Amino acid sequence: MTRPSLSRLLAPALALSLALPLTLTPATAQAGVVEEALEQHILPGFETLAQEAQQLSATAAKVCDPGSVQLQQAYGEAFDAWVAVSHLRFGPTERDNRAFALAFWPDSRGKTPKALRALITAEDPIAKDAAAYTSVSIAARGFYALEFLLYDKDMQQQGSADYRCQLTRAIAEDIATTADVIWTDWRDSYADKIRHPGDRYRSEAEVKQELFKALNTGLQILIDMRLGRPLGTYDRPRPKRAEAYRSGRSQHHVILALEALAPLARILSDGDADLTAKLDGAFDTAIKHAKRLDDPTFAGVAEPGTRLRIEAVQQDIRKLRETIGEDLGPALGVEAGFNALDGD
Image 1 (cartoon, rainbow, N blue to C red):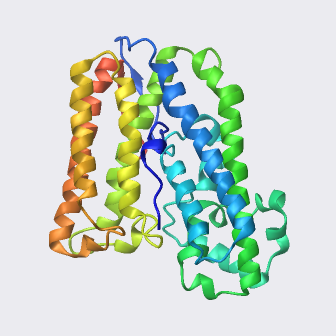
Image 2 (image 1 turned 180 degrees about the horizontal axis):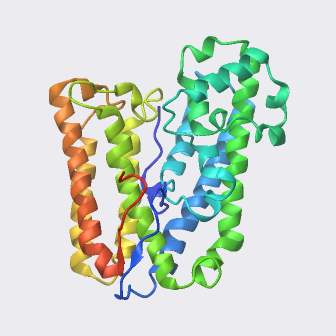
């Protein structure tokens, strides 16, 4: 599948905010960080997502054949745009479960294929009504549901081709609608909440805390989920738990997430040249090693030599996260504290 240039997707990025609130410390963060994060990272990222999602919907309206290179490319470009901002799971993405509507993963109980098969078997007419489709199970919405329709051979044998086509178009349109609502909310209202604390955030320090939390947790998602889930254990590797393996995007998502988080780290370290250089070097190392894996679906977790290289990337990111906590946190005036991924 043709990949879009990553560089135009990297200015955007924040994500999966599973972290609990951070603890502020007395230090003062650099001035201008919030505005820079908005103008260079958040707003461009969500605008790109809305544009690419609209293009996906428009493409699906013209061609719904799962083997269409044009449709697969539009899907890949929209999915890339989501991954690049997926760590910004607060504010407009958090409202009404919009982030889950775009990306229901991990799906450890296999709810997505079950929900899709139920719709296809019944030829549920809800697929004809874009507004009504928002009421279906969240497992049957978003990029991972569409991945089944475009890349899963078993799903492509279910029901009639006409209904699967209709369902493909419904999901693509739903993705576009959700992405547009998120972008509109950021542009028209939430950006001002970030710029002028007092309602949702009591101070600029709390906004910086939110951004740091997104960066910190985005890295932990890479460690524990995007890499940890397929790695499993040495005796029991789990390659089929890799994210988006059906479309061959597992390794790509790790690289893209790292390249999306790096600009945010750079913004948050603004004004400290030594810290910026240290973080840039750590991100560069992790990205270089991730690119060298040459294992698009992480099938290599079951082969000792490849597994060691994947584990090495995971360790790179662990060290990077430690640096974020030990050096960037104090410079910014926050501490990582505990989050929902740490366990008891």
